Length: 97
Image (cartoon, rainbow, N blue to C red; front, side, top):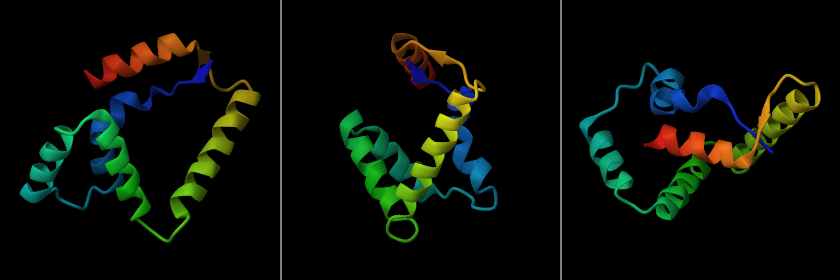
């Protein structure tokens, strides 16, 4: 079983939700288009490098650790519905297509 969040449909708008005051430039659009041409593995690696470049060293790991703890607490408290991994993968594929 894996934890699935209903936030998949928010993914394309996440940057505008988090940073509404930052307009996305044409340079951003160009870089994004180039990045989307990379293989999935290359995009994951690029995203990892970009996340690591934001904030002090270790901040991303600390944020993920806090998020994992929060999600685990939600599962243990019964506030989260778990779904089989096969269904989670199908949902993710649909959201990405």
